[in-house]
Length: 70
Image (cartoon, rainbow, N blue to C red; front, side, top):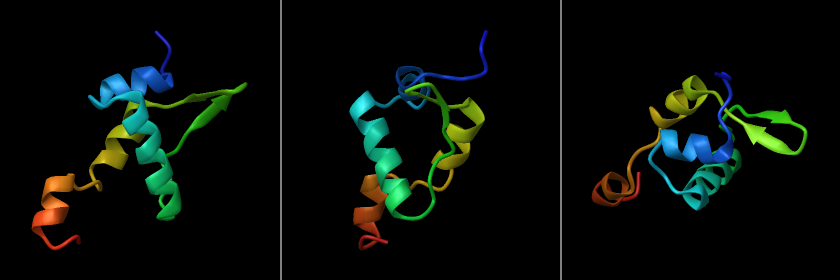
């Protein structure tokens, strides 16, 4: 098995839709903390470790709203 996940595989790993994964990538890039990606041709690939590391700093939306958006 390859150590790299496709975008769909990464979304499945995080229990997100593909649209939500791309929104996460864009949000993290704009914040200056991009998720590490590997490009193989035109395809983005991820490792499970990189995705898991990124999710440890993401705060769920319902907690951001409850904390006044912080």
